[in-house]
Amino acid sequence: MFIRRKILLVMFVCVIVVSAMGNTAGAEKELLWMTWGTDVESVMDVLNIRAAEFIKAHPDVKLNIMCAPYGDYREKLLISIAGGVIPDVAVIESPLLAQLVKQGTLEPITDMIRKNPPTGGLEDFTFPNDAIIEGEVYGLQEGGCPWCLLYNVDILNEAGMPSPTDLWNQRRWTWIDFVEMAKKLTIDPDGDGVIDQYGFAGFAPVMTALDAFVYLTYGVSSAGGKIFDKLEFPEQCLLDTPEAKTGIQFLVDVMTNYNIAPPLQMKPSQAAPMSFTNNNVAMMMGQAGWPAVYEKLFDLPFKTEVSYMPAGPAGLKVPGNSCIDVMFRPVEDKELAYELLRTITEPDSILQVAKEIVWWPARFSILSSQRFKEMYLFDVDLAMEQYKYRVPYPKLINYSEIGDTLVDGLQAAFTGEKTADQVAEDLSKTLNEMLKTAK
Image (cartoon, rainbow, N blue to C red):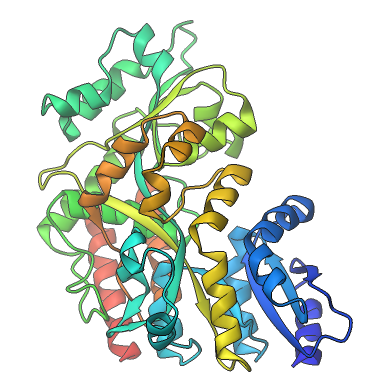
């Protein structure tokens, strides 16, 4: 197995074994842990924290850790699996889970949880059902975050406008209210014909399959529609329904027709989220943990706060990401691999990581703690309030193929290559064929 893992380094130039932790001299066992990250030094600091208890308990185990850049991670992981070079434990985005389960590459951990449950039990995790397929548990969350509205407090104050949260509390925060505010916040103060400040950014560019699911989940669900007929192993795409078309049309209108968002042809440094951190955008759709990340990375000259995305015809619907640590087959020592998986998702480990690199943990016990709230310095309770509005992502056998198709479809709608209705019809037809093929 170790020889095969060496081959992986040749296959993936951008994948690095950053450490072989533990007392490797005379080690009789070894584990391979795959995760995302690019900066070796910072990754090592964080991973040492996460695996500290495991290393302490198993000084005779050699723990190899591989990192791949987040944007390339899914592709590299799938190529690795197809080539027979498989990690023992790895992190995945939750929508990929069903695909891996049906491929037979994941080891269920239901019985192991019964014998040695994680601290706080499964109920302490924010989205525990994301790791469950057909009644079996396949992983434990390490991160999980609702998508919220982020807004520049200074811009809204200077414009004399109420906060989105105030409007939400007054039941005056709908798509119509949002567009009206965004138009007022889109300005050309020097009158040179070039907009200097946009009201909103956040539905484009669509770069990944997860991006597509985030935006479609928000738009379609808020309009009262569904992307598919059911959550687990759907059989029919419903994007051609009137409600779904309404949701897609709203996304397109915001990005291209209302003149409230940066043009798609702008340079990456001018598009969301960089335009937001550059003080050029008043509001943006983003993950709840992003304000803290921005504060740490960019030393922002303005105050950022989280609020609710505007409610559509069907009310508020919130996409929510979930990162899950899973165990792959074949694993030589299931109990040992599970112990690693359990250790790296324990509250103390996750809290330390949240402190070091600023991320949104998937544990209610952490999110509700005063220590965490003091670390993040914005309305954590408001962000957590949005969990009850969360719409889960579908569990698809062919998530990768369908996700990439959704990316192409949304981009076609945003660039004007096709109308929103055409995209909805074409996607429904294509995805229904994919669902039939995947059975």
